[in-house]
Image (tube, rainbow, N blue to C red):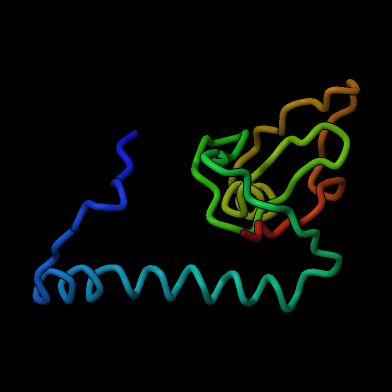
Length: 117
């Protein structure tokens, strides 16, 4: 993927920047309010350092993980909060992949994790 060098100057006109912020800010605020609720209401959240140059994906739906997600402490299986909530609410009937030790993952066996820089 393309990465700007230190000498690259990226110019963005003020009106273009305002347009981008005006359209993205409501979505970002929604995402952050959900994350804050999770941090306040989920016990025993584990911290995990972000891996440089690695984009983490949900092992169930392949969506890029924003921050809070669940994982199996035995095998590292990762599930995003949307997949977790959909299964918890019964919207999705398919199960999760099996653990590397042969057991079946279930929602209660997964730990909540926050990625930190």
